[in-house]
Image (cartoon, rainbow, N blue to C red; front, side):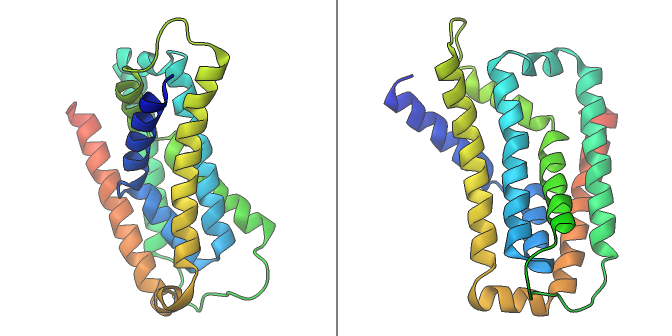
Length: 208
């Protein structure tokens, strides 16, 4: 892969990561309601989910999802259900004070990482995105090194962007304001996630 081709790949991956959506909402919620560590855990686990799709796309497996609509629809509906569950949980979250003292509990960080991974893994649109993106770069005689470059580029950019969001939100007046209004952040996040789940479900069931 040439340097110019890699820059093009990195640019599109960056634009994809920066697009607002459920992933950003989950990172914001875990950072505000829990801690920077929870937000970073979401970011890194989400990157693993994105990296999975980047890897299977280069190996040709993403085409299977496109070629088998029922498999795509099943995964999309599972993703919509998970979004709805996250949204319901956020809307009904306690309005109590956010605890910012001391290190984050291991179980809490694990739960945050689980949410981050599943929000990516249960989104087959990522596979379609990478299929469209990588189609201009992938070729039949790709070696292990080039495949690793594809995987690392998508994974590092995605994880780096969301980790940057988590760190930025955990500093200064922005975090103070968000934590004072954490219950409203929860409710707004919940409404966004429920709306995205509804739109996804309707689109899949209508065959759009």
